[in-house]
Amino acid sequence: MSEKFFNVIINMLNERQLSISSISRQLKSEGYDQHRLIITGYLRALNDTGYLVEQEIPPSKVYSYNHRGRETDIYRILENSLKDVDPEYRYPVAVYILTSLLNRPCFRYELSLVGITPKSSPYVRESRNERLKEFREDISRFDVPETDKAYEMIGNDEGVILHSSDVINGIMKNLLDLTGLKSRYHSTRITEQWE
Image (cartoon, rainbow, N blue to C red; front, side, top):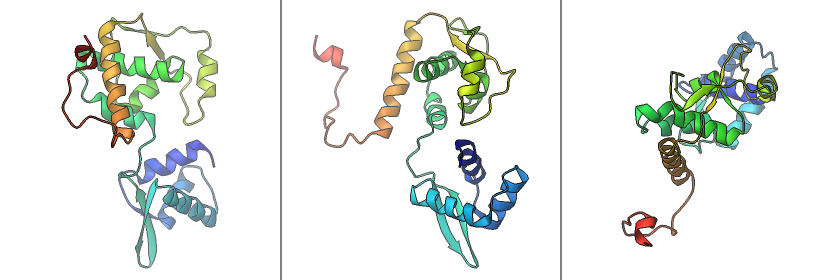
């Protein structure tokens, strides 16, 4: 099964519980005509790996997205983390992080996945990279419309980099188990401690 199929299932179950029959019908309406046993096996595998929660409600089982499970989708993680960023920097920070992580310009669709609408900014420009078509085709997790614009940074603004660093630091602290590694006492910045 492809990553696109995975995303269809996750998006379908993100806000609601559905039975196998309901999932099968909805998948069929979206162009995925799979046998019910294959869908059942796939759903059980997603349950076993922590992506879904399986609940028995006689006479059937229902599935829903496991919001408490470990979040690994970069777009969802970034969307949650960008909410705390100064609105002036939110758009350029999203572009900076995505372009740095993905080693390519980011597309309008990707920005929409992190809750950002492109706008005029002194830090970001529309990309004219000659490899945009290749970058678009290399993305296998979702379809990027051919008319979708791509964006890249204009230089390296200190404010954008500082805000981006704060976002990435926050993401790392949330995702990694730092138990037994952090100081029990509140500390100031490292640069202040060692000066």
